[in-house]
Amino acid sequence: MAIKVKRKRRGRGSSAPQSTLTGEAEEVLNRALERIQPRPDRKTWKLMVMGLARQRAIETYMEEFLEEHVEKVGWEWGALWITHIHIAEHGLVDEAMEMYQLLAETFPLNYMTEMSQSRLHRDFTGEYYVARDHINVAQTLWPDGCEAFYQAGILYDLMGVPEYAFAMADRAYGLADQFGDTSYKLKARISFNQAVAMWQAARPYGDIKAYLRRALEDWPEYERAQNFLDSLPEDDEADPRGRSAMQRFTDDIRRNMQQPSYQIIEPPQAEDNDDEEG
Amino acid sequence: MSDGEAQQAEAPFVLPTQVAVARYLQMKVESILNTPYQVTGEMSPVAHCLQESGDAEETAELLNLPEDQHEIAIDLLEDALEGGDLEEVYGLRGGALNILMPMAHEEQDRVLYAIEEELEGAPELSAFLHAPNELFSALTPAEVWVGTGKIEMALADLFLRQSWLELKEKSFPAPGAANTEWLSRLRLWSYNPAQVQNYRGRVVDLIKQERRENLASRVEWSEARGIDVMFKPLE
Image (cartoon, rainbow over all chains, first blue to last red; front, top):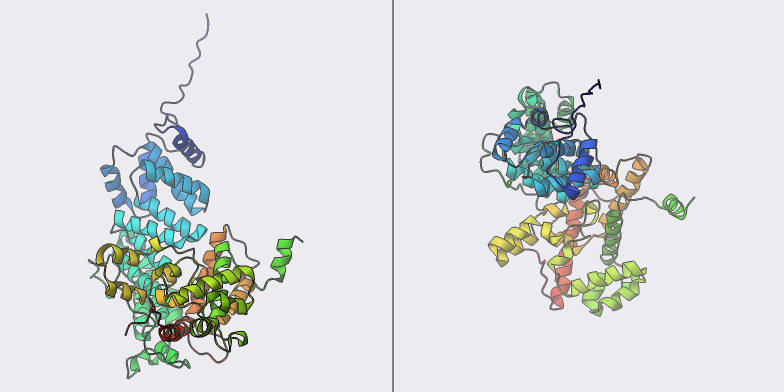
């Protein structure tokens, strides 16, 4: 009597299920799957996506996103989404661009995908205007996403526009509580960044100090803010003409400086930004 | 040692991207055109072109520049004779504060786009020309148009040499990453007092002030020649 060998069934239910994507898109997906371990499949992709979303404090957005696009996103999207985030963070530009292309053309646009793409351009390609455009898309997709405003502040600082950096950071501060127990550190960093932006825009030292003090209220051990505060001169508030020490300094230029270098410009998405002092 | 390596060893600094190199060349020619020389009658080439020759080629010939710089000079002088064109401020313009930025394209300018799409008015466009612009590190389009001055060029050369000395041994995962490191330094440098004799004040303020003064002079020379300058400062 012949012995029957029970063969293991391959394909269905394995870690690499059949994809509905074809041609070049399938090849991109396969390359993405080779880059990730464990591989998302039909059973696990949602759990994996939400796990990563929790780490980034975007679970509220992602729950709504998955609910809204339930018929359009599945394990293929999940695999690409997770892999793209990691690949972009590691600066693998070509692979990340390839995955982004597929995500953007085949699936609904996603906040986190746009944020990853923005950081990729800021940190690895030096295309700062493209980075700005991805952040703008992210802000449209989720107007309450703290990270998009926080990162926009950093980007505008790099682009040499401190007023915009300040305004974006201001919006981020109002949304920072979505980071839960760790939000106090983020809030302190945002206040510090705002103080730096004010220093860059030659605002009065009294205003700069107010933001540094706010940073230290949120996180008393924040050494960087304390050091910056300690380095600022004392006499600014006593200035009888109400002008900043920095402006007085620039008045000493041999040329005649009639106007401050900058004007404060309101942020584009500042309509409901009334909970924090500007 | 290869030719490229030998060239690099001799260069006072090496810039992180090709765009930065092209921007540097543009900045250099702009500063030449805004600096007085004996060959142009103790006036700047721009002043010579607007006040004396009225001919871009004729003025540029006096400078005896290498071919690539000569071509840039002709374009800039012709633009000055025409009173300016908004298209001219995009691309590689913007001097020291923008040397590490990518190419700027007109369609990336959201403020201009909003004006063209919604406002459609001369007063709005005029205000736009004199408002700090995020594409130009908060310089106004008018300040970009007038070009780099000699003080700005001297400051930029010092900064680039110093940065190269400090960064040349450092390795980066991509040219863009190196550029971002350079750019962070550029911003810090620009908000601090300039370390140059005879000048006091923050680098960014010195640069803007020099550009404003050059703009005022250029408008004066142009108007004397009957040229209507698009970037004329607001009253």
